[in-house]
View (tube, chains in turn yellow, cyan):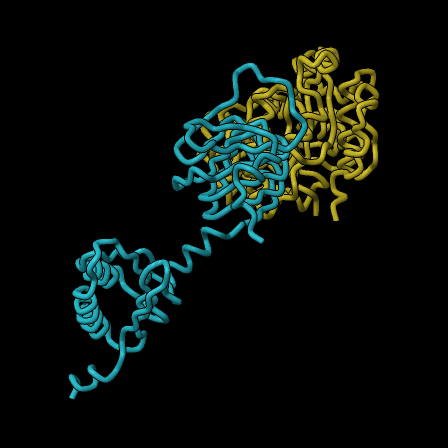
Length: 266
Length: 227
């Protein structure tokens, strides 16, 4: 029985889909059986980022409405044997699926996969409710911007109310080190202090992420990129390893906050 | 027969003190009997009263509970006698409702959590929050608000109109402060950070919220002490 982890943020454009694709890829690199689920019905992206767009035949709504079997809708990744994805429908909207249907699908996927990563749409409405319905754990993605942190805080509040979901973990994405050092951007300590949840990882703002995304090749595949290492480290922390944060932030005393890792809660 | 009983039994005892009259009313007889006897006795006494000084009256009800109608009747009757003025009504008993209200008003509700964006935490008495109020979050109390962490959102003390209510926070960086009907917000240009506990309250005679070091509460709100 695997773990279902929802990746969410509240605000749009902070990198939920990129994070889902890369954590999923990094977990697959570690030999885990992984299924990515795109719940952004009507605005699907995960298939594009994974480079699997033209292989879609059936989608999430087809499965929910039982027009096909779950395994028929799953798309196998072109690079990894053990990485699959369930795409969202593009022609419907969020109300095409109910939370109970979502939960049933995720529960079924958990039987076969070590990790089910659920890519959540922006917002706190139906799409969010669908995305968290089957989740056991959650990752909140934010960027060092006040508005993103505010929305992350709102989302954390909603996640904390869910009894079936463990306390959320934080990923701070798109860090620009020079702006953080000059104080023009919120620094990681400040974000962690406001949100008061455990930090799962930090990812720098890196041109290679955008380049890779556009090519449909998750950056996590490229070991020479710093962002790639960051995503791989996040995956290792999800697997229960202790991995220190990347060197940039080390002097800022983040180590202590990294002691509790994903999946190691008592 | 009932008349005879009324004559022999004392339902009302009048005692003079230096502060005025104490009227001690029997608490086991009918309210009507008390009223009748009191009316009689006060009328008789009143005749003896020569000077026009106002005498303050304290009513001692013992274990009798007065409905608001009965209290009205009693006050009106006493007030109708010249020179007499009801100052206080002492009773050993209050209604369950009043007791519950009193309990709520004086209870300090302690809560440990982070009040996050979009969340509202509301209590009827005082609030002791062991945690932060994040931007976009709101805490509201009919009484005082004591925040052990950082206040970055909105705090509304004295929500039912109590201007004496105070707000304290270990780190006071609110987006808005409200005391009763008054609202204040920090200047748009955030000043230098003060790293000590602060409090917010309304000074007597002012109609704006002051923020100061927490130590000033000792002087401006001594009744916060409930030892």
